[in-house]
Image (cartoon, rainbow, N blue to C red; front, side):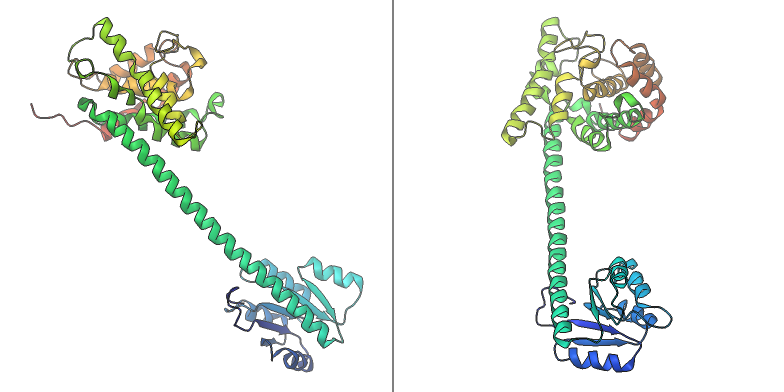
Length: 371
């Protein structure tokens, strides 16, 4: 049936037999209820079966010169265009071994000659109904798969827009950061990809996680929305008291993302990595960071990645309170921080791809405003 739901159309049956009399008998038996196509040999049968519209069922003789029925059936099942067409063998070969061989090459039923017309019609009707049901389920499954894929894309879009909106909110508080969030997310992805080849990080950095880290990185400083302007935008060095307030941007960021997760009723949501990064990206490998003085592998992998990315970008960027360093100077400082500020393995990976960081920085360079 060209369309499993088109119940008004006559199904098409292909009858294959090298004997003209047998073809005439089957045509006369079937033509009132079905559209009948005839083929007098295996080669002709394969051509007819693969020419659209394909038959809905094939009645196939076995003993034929040239290509016999077994080989025809096997070829039909090997071709994706004809593999789903049910084949019923119609033959005088009635031994158990013959039937076993027929089922082995893919037939769905076996009718022996001389035929009984009522049996043939009943078997044909049964297998056409089964095929119609399979086609219907196949169409439904294809529809459902498309709907699931569509819904997945919609959810992913909502996730991406949520992160972008939150990241943009943080960026508005500190105009001097410019393309900082774009650069850092690319740094994080580059470094994570490099570390995928390190066995210590394999289970932490599959491709899906790396992509989520890339998308989550822009939220690392979301907590700065809660820092007063006179501290956040201060052109000079912060006082110890001011620095203590500045440090709270890590917990403020965690709390903001956690609140969003609770609203989503999804504690293990797509915001998990964003929460980790916002909370712990200021921690240091030697335990001298903040807010919790975590050390070594107590610090989540996501935050360790962001620490390298964030520091590198801060070093090469101009601020009102400092000039920009060169790439070489920034690389030197990160090298010196190996095992102190930064995870040693991540430092080594960074040093191997430092030129990629340089290229990312150049791609998203800040354009100085006119004085």
